[in-house]
Length: 361
Image 1 (tube, rainbow, N blue to C red):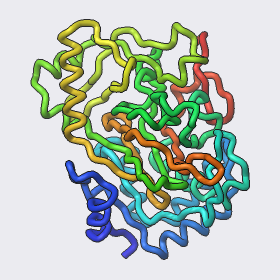
Image 2 (tube, rainbow, N blue to C red):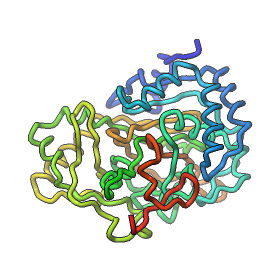
Image 3 (tube, one colour):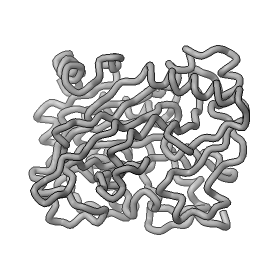
Image 4 (cartoon, helix red, strand yellow):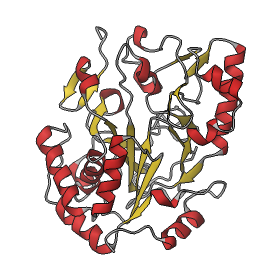
């Protein structure tokens, strides 16, 4: 069949890469056949990756995805785009990969010889473009596709480039939901593997809707009030004006618990409750988020979409495996998506779809 969610795949994932404390919802797993995988590879292999993300490039990869992906998957992604029946996450299996990854670079400047082509970049943009509009923030990487490679210099930092500290559960760029009158936080993000660390550090996902059902009405009431100051991520603070580094008092949840908009980050110095009662409710929410979570190894051939409106994600602490040159082996790629880029019109465009916060906005 053109479209399938295989029990075999689910069993493999449960036994090897998904933590057993909670089950993944198999309705959100899509597995390509080998023929579909190879067809998608051939379509993407003809396209030159454009790190600026200009409109011609986005159009080309979107059309390639429409031609190559099964209709049932395109239909599901379109449903996700409407956000009327949103999935908390989507996991794609048996996707095409670059024929050869020769080494993992030691910086964000990726040399052409690092791998044999641009399949991973084109793939993550192609699938993301069927759900929303791909973009990047300059503080996260200077190109539209962000390369998440452990940095030995930043190994004890709470960032995507860190490793030895757990990057606790968070909504991506949570503070940006309350920066001025516009919401600059992504509606979703996508992760895919390029080179896998043998230690298989897990990325963990948690549907906040399930966590909220574990809380009392009093805690939900606290979390719904403007009782929390939320800070921008660590990597942003060096180049972000002090005036833009923290929100005014804001709520953690907006809307109903069935379809909420959630804003929080649980690693240190990210959310400051303004009183003890608010702090207690936030800690209960954090414990509930951890309780309903599961882990997944984002390896080559697998892509994970995360609904950033109400799905938290984290990354386990790990000590990177090094190659013969002393560079970390693990290499993930990421993009952000938004429903459209209208809100970003007040940001500084560094490249076509790479934006930067500016003091006058």
